Image 1 (cartoon, rainbow, N blue to C red):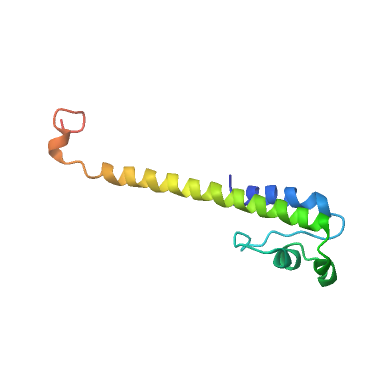
Image 2 (cartoon, rainbow, N blue to C red):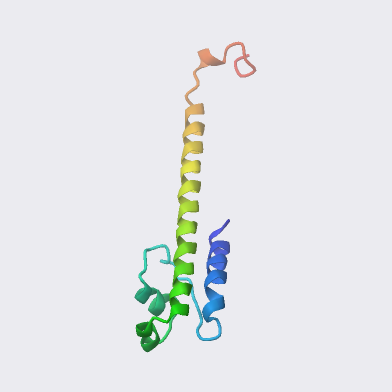
Length: 108
């Protein structure tokens, strides 16, 4: 899943609660931990007085956003670890000596 797809999923989770009132944007630094105030101001771009009110619908939209970001981060960590393990395996394949290949298709 590429970054644009993940951003679209995060947007789809957040948008229904507030789509008619504000444009919701996923910023490039969205993977950093944001509190409700920062999310309300920087991501949802709601007016300051609305952010101060902290409406229940806004809080649930924030919770869905935070959950989607956490899910994305966990998937990315797992994917990066898998790639690291695969790279280590490929790097070790280069450590084969000529003695190890005698009698095989490689050491004819």
